Length: 145
Figure 1 (cartoon, rainbow, N blue to C red):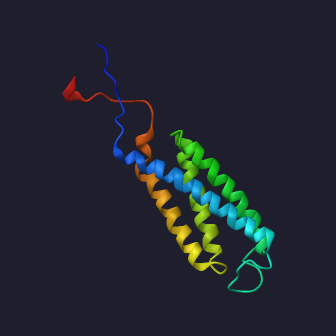
Figure 2 (figure 1 turned 90 degrees about the vertical axis):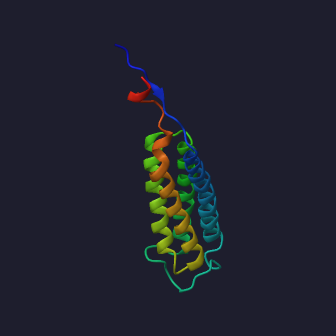
Figure 3 (figure 1 turned 45 degrees about the horizontal axis):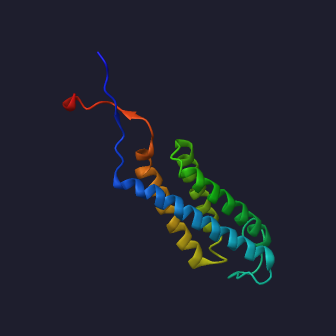
């Protein structure tokens, strides 16, 4: 007896993964720009409180944001492939981005809150609808055999 395999049906919800990838790229570009601004002018970088931001000064956070921006962009490119590992990395990197922005609230409160909200949307899109990108086959429907 042979088994009939049906391809995975793609629904409209897979657009959420494309949305997450595009937003990851935008978030990466913004993080990179935010880091470059902190690197090129740490004395002029807007700080609501003088001094350091938790662990680093503004220049240290600039390097951290540049590295995070590159990682966000690379993760987005991998996410478009639909690989499971890319979805896991996207959730982790978006979570790290949210935590970093949480620590940057003293420097830029409104921007940080907006980026945290975007990171939450990315995590939702990847977790709730990421399984629809799996390539492969599903078990046959008993009613159609």
